[in-house]
Length: 152
Image (cartoon, rainbow, N blue to C red):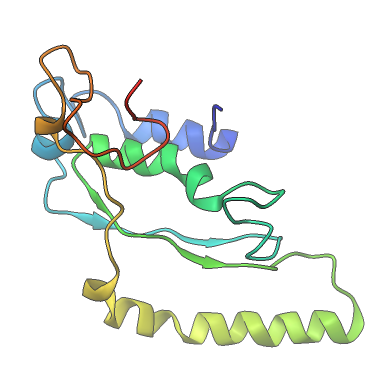
């Protein structure tokens, strides 16, 4: 399964994550130029939490975000577990639309709590450089944190 970010985000990554500016071949992952910096995704989906889960028909939102999270990891960032808000879309009408507006206002009002609780948000786990052999293959003794990097 290949998961690509939306074209506008992919273009932003290609313009902003220029080789030599945010990463070099000798400065990536744990030794990346952005080491010590943290990032967090706050993401809305139009589907329910169930539909956006591991067995949901929309696909696992965390897996959809993995390519972008790994790009940030490549530059040295620590990436926090995403904060997800489900059922946010423009198809509501009447009372349902009003209810969505109130829910969105409540979500935005709680963003200060997200920031205040920054250090309580766990990081996405990635394999350390030491988990790979000299050829870049995951060692048999190393854990796997993603279906994208696992024992063959």
